[in-house]
Amino acid sequence: MSLIHTQAEFHPEPEDTARQHRHKLRREAGKLLPGERVVSCGVKRVSEIVTLWRDSAGGCYWQGVETCGSIWTCPVCSAKIAAKRAEEVKALVQAHEKPGRAVYMATFTMRHSSRDKVADTRATVTKAWARAQAGKAWKSLKAKFHIIGTVRALEITYGANGWHPHLHVLFFTDRPLGEFMERRLADRLFDRWHGIIDRLGGTTERGGFDFRKASDATTAAEYVAKWGAGYEVAKGPLKGAAGCSVWDLLKRSANGDHLAGVLFMKYAKAFKGARHLTYSRGLRERYDLRQPQEDLDLALDGEEGGERVDPETGEVINTEAGALYTCDAPRWAFVCRMKATGLLLDIAKEEGRSGVEHWFDQHHATSPHEPEDFGPKRPRRELRIYREALDRQTGARTAEDIAADLRAGAARARARIRVEDEEEAMRELGRRDPLKTFDQLARRTRDDR
Image (cartoon, rainbow, N blue to C red; front, side):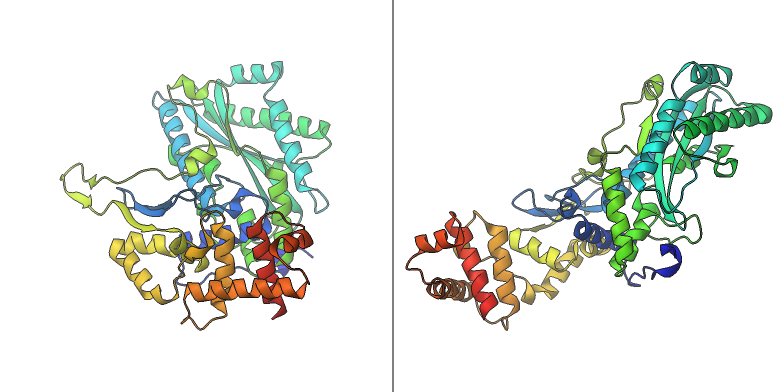
């Protein structure tokens, strides 16, 4: 039976926002893909302090943490990238339509079954589009229907019949075609696509092909840029043969659906390095638009401070812009441990600095402090050992007491494995770094308690 009809649906907490859903799903993606950058995205520090910023438009974000920039596997980055890609495409469509030109939208797909591998279906669709835009036949078609260029978006869903790859394509023409020519172009495009897919060993049906004129720039932009999780997280999983998005698979995995997690991992491997959105050569330059930015650049948050002023009244709309709160290493570790990265951004947006400070004041009693004895060389590993020890305590003991306990445990571990000194302990454990040896001895001591 199909995953679509048998597995539990994702039920977010009612008080959570879409932003918090995305942060939860990013953590789930990190669990499924331990070797990918999404593990560290929004969590790993890249500076001494992590700063919560509020920009002049009221948006809030963290600075000083790693950004993976993956539109395929990171719900947080994909939402940012998709929103900015939509603005990028919208600007292109608006520039194109000003002199009375037209934009048409088309969907290309192929038949698929539950036996098809996601990597194979992706390769077939992308290869078919590359061939569709090559050769004399394509040049002739462009000239006949006045096609200036194209924008292509790659998407995929999973349904009752397995993986369903498809392309959303915008065709830019230098004049409106009229109803008759629109039908002719649709027929020619489908025939060309059908022939190429057939030569690649696949099949396609006219029912899976769609062609129509874009009603406005916003519609056209969302047609090709709606892949981001910002468009999907708030929706429930889709039913039937149309299937569900990969973000729905991630939601199901977060609810304990092992099969959905396996499917997401296969998808992530197959789509790694793929380009979601591509422009035909020379299209953006035709309207003096700059080259599109890379996904990672779009995923980065960068505005720092300033005021937002109403252009008509001159009234300052938002005066609390800039750095709202800074976290040192132990405090940021506590934020991540509480899984509060998304929650604090929502609090900052609604309540500003005072709301964030109030949250930290409420949780101050459980906030860890990094032990000084461990030194700066290996803070993350030592902090983890400290946290595990802290979890077993009542909370009344100091970091120095716990560190002393760990050292005493290391001494007992050395005695237990019958060695006289630290050097022999290192040789016994096959280690050459004293800090690593201490970690392993302390961990062995805890396990034996």
